[in-house]
Length: 218
Image (cartoon, rainbow, N blue to C red; front, side):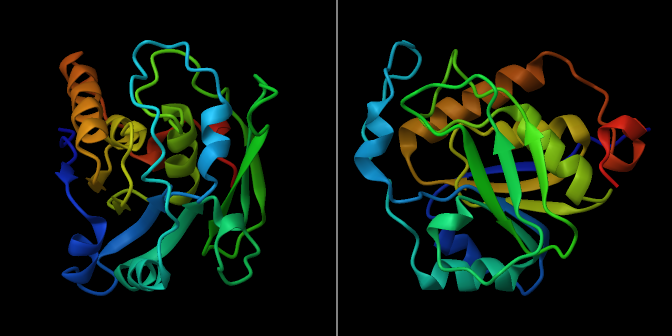
């Protein structure tokens, strides 16, 4: 019998959760905090009617306390946009290459990690349809991270849930997840997206260790 993972989607400030969480409570934090690039986000042409919210008032870089708490509550971290933050050097940086290039947006994104394994790159198309968040990442990207950096039984944290792509990935692969999202509109849209996915009746949740060998890097 395969147990359904516990997906805990929280509407609120991630700092409230972090401050009350014990040391090393999470196996991995996989987070995509605001990069602080502001108006650069609005250069994208918003043609998708599902993306009704284009304000970037939320795009404020987290302070030092956020990163201190994140590293206290989790044994390892994967931080998208790590090149925008003051973080220690890492051997294992990750690059997401976006084959479907758009001249107004970056062709790749960088993630800082706490792992000591070799740096890696993956190619996954960016989301271009039915977006509910301006910086929405594909579910396939999060499945790649979980397959290669998480172990069966790991508990995952995401402090900036956004479109909740990671919630769908954790549900499909059988990982418990705590996720916070401060923005009410994004939270509600993300929860609705996740619930639609769960309602599709996907009953098989294969832990990362059971995925086909060709999907693993190591």
